[in-house]
Amino acid sequence: MFSIDFGMIMLIRRVFEGQWYLRRWWSFRLGDSIFLPIYAYFTSRLFNDAPKSLFENPCWHRSLLFGGVFFAFMNEMRAVQGGMLTLTQVLKPSQAYHTLIFGPMFYLVLAPLPTVVRSRWSRDKLLALAGFVGYVVTYVVDTFFNDQTTPESF
Picture 1 (cartoon, one colour):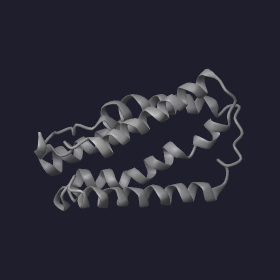
Picture 2 (cartoon, rainbow, N blue to C red; picture 1 turned 180 degrees about the vertical axis):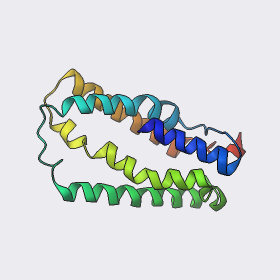
Picture 3 (cartoon, one colour; picture 1 turned 135 degrees about the horizontal axis):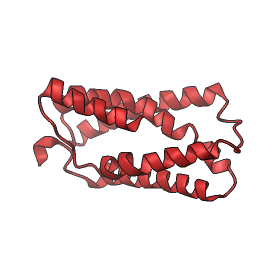
Picture 4 (spheres, rainbow, N blue to C red; picture 1 turned 45 degrees about the horizontal axis):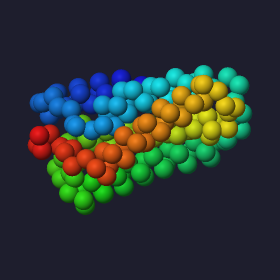
């Protein structure tokens, strides 16, 4: 899923924007490329013997999907208001796609988290949590400490 998302963003940048570029974001370099696949792999291993009561609740899934879409739009508004991005940059096809796909990706990452937390301690649980925490750290670094987020800035 992560490689499909990356491929779509790069295709949109090349076809619609006429350029290839990667932003200097740690959440992509380490988060999407290393930490999220680690989290996804070890989380899937935990699902075999973990309690699934919350995961089976439809309200949980709807709330997460709605929360992810809401969070994506709030994040973009914060980026524009904070001067990190301009409105023109937010409306670029690749950025618009990234904002739209954020909701489903937010859901895919957070939906199984209670199952991971409630599972018994094991190497799989430790590595799944390490992947999740690693991604969160890269997101925090990008959100609060990275001032070079647009292609025009480097």
